[in-house]
Amino acid sequence: MSVEHSLLGKDTNYPTEYQPGILFPIARAQAREQYAQVEGIQQGKDWWHVFEISWLNAAGMPQVAIGRLTLPASSPNLIESKSLKLYFNSMNFTRFDSQEAFIATVEKDLSAAAQAPVAIELIQADALAVSQPEGICIDELTPERLASHPDAALLKLDDENAEHTEIQLYSHLLRSNCPVTGQPDWGTVFIRYQGKKPCYRSILAYIISYRQHNGFHEQCVEQIYADIWQNLQPEKLMVYAAYTRRGGLDINPCRVSDLTWMPRPIRLARQ
Image (cartoon, rainbow, N blue to C red; front, side):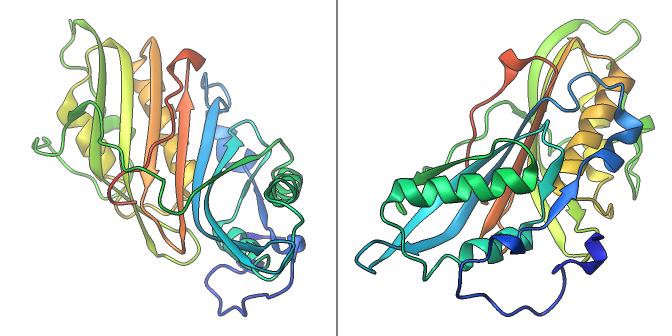
């Protein structure tokens, strides 16, 4: 089934009975074809925060929690977000003997959709702390030129004889569009980089160039990662985008060239 035939962008009745079949997987392979040789493009994780989780305990009492999902970037499929929202809503009136039984059911269903092991951590409703971004914010810089769509040619080193550096930059100016509904997706993107010093203004211009781009969250992060890797040729690279919440979900894809650079999942104020 193509994305156009999914539930995206359509009026939908919210199910009140458990429906694992409502989950809609999307293959990652096609979007990755042009980046097949990029080191680390399938290395990392997609973290999701699910803010609308509820089920019934054995006595029929409602339970609530915040969920943190972890999908491996190596999974053949990502999971379309509206179908995930509807899946969790379908469990609102389903009884489970224990929290562990609920977790086991979710992990089984999501792993089947992603075709890879998916984990969920349940967090108390008032226990998900807000993190402060770490690194150098580049949002006050003025790029030499701007583009209306992603343009890897914007990316430059600081100069021809750029010094070696290890830095983490971030920008709150990432914006892209859902490729089916056209709804805007907002995020903060972190770039950890080791190699010849990049031009910070060029990286900001490149991030801004996504403002009219149509792409799923995971695909945008992989394109950013691949373009930096191929054009600036760093020794190590990490790209992590913390997207704002939509439909009770936020999505946080991360790709790394070196697993020692895997960050911990965070939640920012805008999420």
